[in-house]
Length: 95
Length: 95
DNA sequence: ATAAAGTAGTTTATATTATAAACCAAATAA
DNA sequence: TTATTTGGTTTATAATATAAACTACTTTAT
Image (cartoon, rainbow over all chains, first blue to last red; front, side):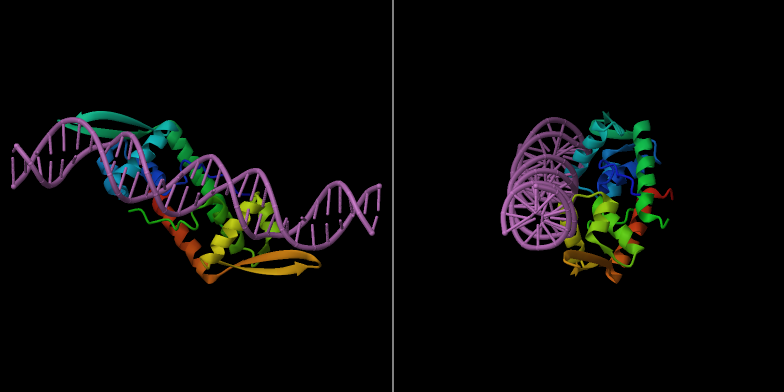
């Protein structure tokens, strides 16, 4: 009947992050913060969780002298998102 | 960009409950517990929240001698669900 | 009649999660 | 040089989800 919803993606902010990364190849911390309107603290924590889960990879570098954190989705992340959307349909599609 | 997700519906169990009530006119506690596989305690708490929010109405009665709790979705509940699904699309639809 | 087991829930304690506030280190602007 | 801004992280707190324990009864077995 109802498919379980991956708790890692069933979070407004983490879902928004994955939703962005799905279509963008790579995005940095500031870009994600702007797009999601999240606080930096919350974003930092949630990116960490996505990385722990293997759904994204985070690379730390510099843009000139300023620190720069860039994120990409992994294959596991893409697959998790696909499964999450599929599971959602079991709740929202009139079937 | 991303529409906010009503926190009252952004919960696996509450979403499942609303998803059932949308299509069934009325359902009792035991039916909901069976369909959702939730524990009774959790279901009790979440039904209460949905009622507090005005998304469902709960009626207490008896089936013979046994207590019976029946739930129906309200117009507000139906509208909240519609908006929730619409908001979800801003995360999952490739647009 | 009484004890044991089952039904239909509620309450409460605990673990998990989300969030913001406070902080840090470095860069830039006044 | 002392603010202010940028790009974050850590930590404290509030909110949420969940299960375990409990209540109140009914049914069944002895």
